[in-house]
Length: 361
Image 1 (tube, one colour):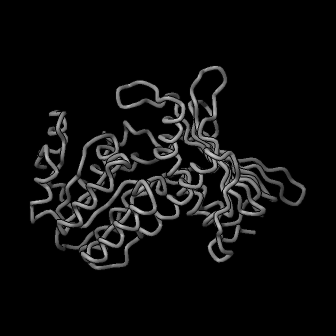
Image 2 (image 1 turned 30 degrees about the vertical axis):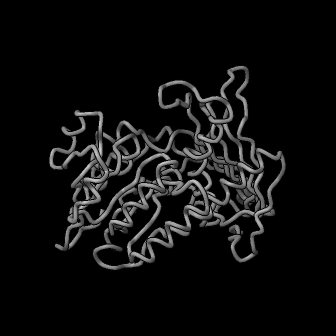
């Protein structure tokens, strides 16, 4: 983590304190020297007060919105609540971060972006899986052209069980859409980060796993000579990434990070985002007739980078690192996936050649 000069502090409020707020936001806000975790909206769990004793816990979002000392509101809630909370925060002249996917529809996303412009407030999305160590490793390998011309990119975010709010498994249709939003949105964002917008989308949101009765999702994004396959299922162990090119292939098992460790360890510690050697990916390549195999050390996750850029944008008026318009592309693919699943056909994205990034040769 970089060193920060003495500068103004930014008071931050978390609009909820579920898994996302507790794991992916609070530790980084608390670790940043100039971000102050000032208020947390939580109605049910007293034990969290021990984690952040300097924060003011409130049970009503209005207590946050009426507090003129709060500069930034983080919205780590399910997508069906994101629009309402973000709109209220912007109208209260707060800067706003919204957990991916950002909104339930393109229409809602555009309304929030327009409102932020009118209120002269910073609005952005938090696509946190961009800073997972395994994805940073994949991105480095792809951008350096180690694999040659890519023809397959396959990514998984698999879970043994996907639970509903009350611990019950969702019904197939509800579960499929929920998985698309909760896990698929991150897979889609990563693919767009690497390759830009696809030419078409094909999706199965009701994919069954054997005789278990538990479903998953599968998306196929067409990039011409490159097929991108995204899966989130109740299964394991399955490779996290499989990338094949004309010169080499790369396969990576393991999960992005241990979420329980993220709650306990400080993001400033060296061990926080380091992955054990047994989970390093395997590179398999041919070089001048020689068949070479080896391990690739997983880069350390760097989620703090996101909050560093947020501070820079608010306090120092630097350019925003992740612009809200980036969320529109993820939502477009989500909407195309839902349409594809409903109509059982491939959906053309009407993507112009300029928005499809070239695949490294």
